[in-house]
Length: 152
Image (cartoon, rainbow, N blue to C red; front, side, top):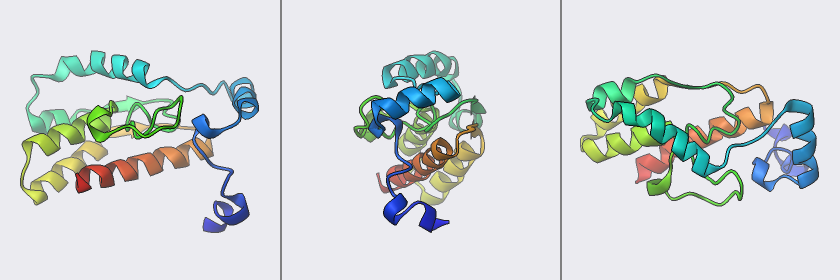
């Protein structure tokens, strides 16, 4: 319910980078929650992605990717740096959904075809998360990523 996330409750759900050190430590201890720095996300996604450089656009777009502990979804959509919370420019994003949308945007001029392929990209991109606040932020990041690429 919106009331649980707004007003006096608006500071409860926020990216890990903006949480206090004390809360980060507590969550790491109680839930084994850690977040991967963007440079590591890039290296790992680059290593996987290099296997698909020869894929045609449709195959690349439909390739199934799964992030089993997605947190706020940086492996999927890198809208902000996980350590600092600062925004990442669209050209520098390293998530696997970012990669699919960037390639679609570079290769497709027709709006209807762009939309079709983006829907396929999202339908084949999965993330699993147990913590409700991180899951909400992951969903938000994926929604805003769509908007960012649509506007761009």
